[in-house]
Image (cartoon, rainbow, N blue to C red):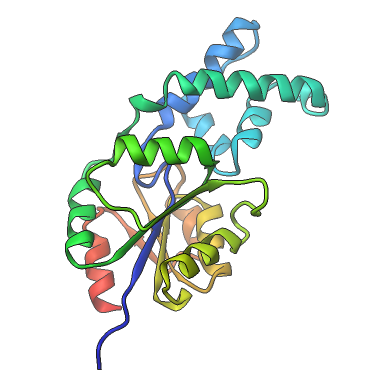
Length: 221
């Protein structure tokens, strides 16, 4: 009996893409302009993952958190700042070899991110141009953000692959919860922005220390 085709759905920032420095500097540049406190890279590890507005809000002083006008203005400024820096991000070591192997094996490749869809599409198109992606989706107004499984399930449907044959790979509790909620295989990566303890507590079934480790999981599955 032929084995069903499998799919790997990746988170983007912290999983495929080493983008922490660019995300952080995009916000810190704005904070410096306004003489507001800036943050270190380790702070941004926990600001990222729930979408662009959450990142902006967490970066700002608490007295601005309920000022919707200010938040909207900072969001627009952040988009403009990040638009100047996103292309400086790089794939993590080993990701290129992993994608080569997955493509050779006929595994469907997808990206499901809470980064705004326009930036998600740009990053995948420009920073991962040598691979054919079966589906790429960032944050859209009409689709609930991760950890809601709607985006992951819509991607599986688009690819024509059952959820049980999909592997959801990410670096945060949000990603692990998404995979659990979608009834997919749930894989955390140790090279990303969040600690492994967080991934395990959020439902990771497997932890990768190197990208190539995913190939062994797929062959077992």
